[in-house]
Length: 79
Image 1 (cartoon, rainbow, N blue to C red):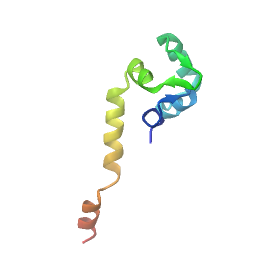
Image 2: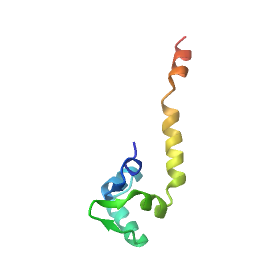
Image 3: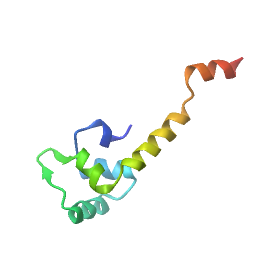
Image 4: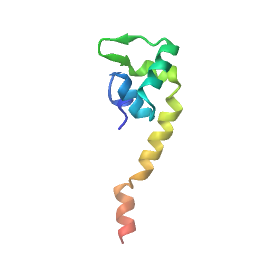
């Protein structure tokens, strides 16, 4: 699952992992967007908003949901 959705605060490594980017690239983007860093990390909601990730997250969630068939579908295909 995505760390940006699981945690209220994330560090640059978590953001980089979720986005598939280098940590240094993420840090440059954070600096450019002037996102505040707290003692426990960056606020996930602010990262999602400033990076414009809402549509990307929705698409990623749809793709993940299509990968695993529902129990009803797997029962029908087994017959």
